[in-house]
Length: 481
Ligand code: 5GP
Image (cartoon, rainbow, N blue to C red):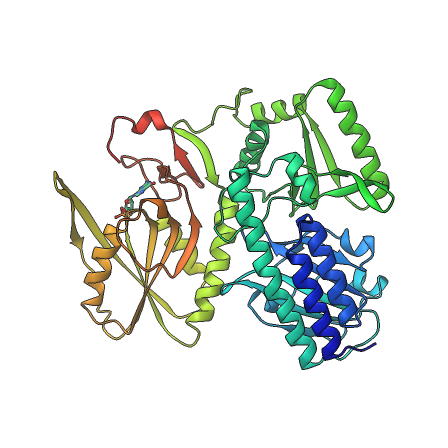
């Protein structure tokens, strides 16, 4: 076992070439994994991307890893080498004994011993990771670390370009055929777009899960079912994965002949992957479930007025945990004053502060708007209770739309000379921005729609919804928003 600078150089040349080829993304990522493993004298390599909520790692390319090791399912990003996802290069000398490894038992049976992991960074944000594995104990050199970091950098450019292609050519959606073509689920993105469901019944099912506060991932994994001449000839992508239950769910709301076909695939999947738990829900079962919990068979929203759920309660909570981690890290060793504007921010601020591992104080302001023909004027109706002079202030916002409110409030806060002033917003409606306000922490970037729930209101109502949903267009047609 061993590697040299010249093998690193040749590998980078090969990776640069394949990255610029016309192969599918999956094929390119597999090739990168293979070249990287070989150049480092390692036995295996895995390229993974974070899902949109940055909670799970989805495999996009592998080499040399056994089926069993790959079949262990999506990795929980927080449990699986979290330091890599904090942007660090990590060395695990012995995976079977290291508590940072999520599946040490599998590592042992699969003879994975040493691991080197590097983050894939898109600008400064971690979007995935690349890892190499060896069967025997191995000392990774500084040159190895620097090589893997370069491979991660090339992968970042490649993945960004692939995403751009998808956006341009496929109108924000990867349909079933296209997903098969690249043999991977929807590409995670840094813009944290809401899930695009291929079928309305899938969205109904997602709502039912949200109602129960059961976490779900949409089409996170494809299982090869048949191979022909070394190539995958047939794949099966279950609709949902429920991480807490470690269960895949496939919905069958299609015609009877298609149900038979799905049953065949499911039988095959169970034979090939006996450790995978999967449930097939027929149309009847599904509607019975929906009816039992208050949804009508036609899928009308249980909550009148909301046309679509954009982010479920569990998605919001997961995102908040990630934001809180970043804030706690950035302000380590300091005291923080969180400032919120009443009332929309109450849910977000309350949940966020519970996850901060810092000494924190909280203060609120209230504002009102005076509409005129020449635009709206903001007026402060309740100022801060305590002085913020010389303090580190984090302004917490529920939503930034045109940015006018935030711009005004930031000006007001700056006049009190805080030591620092940053902004954290749960929602960013960038398409409507009129003034350039700095946003340091963003929960979700949302489309230009009027949203309610989780603190956000329409005429004072809807704040109590545990999710963020889009208000029915008919309700706001009359109003100027
Ligand atoms: P901005 O000054 O950025 O245009 O507006 C910010 C304020 O407008 C927010 O604090 C919020 O009160 C309101 N707002 C903007 N967009 C929405 C939305 O989609 N839903 C709700 N409920 N309020 C919004």
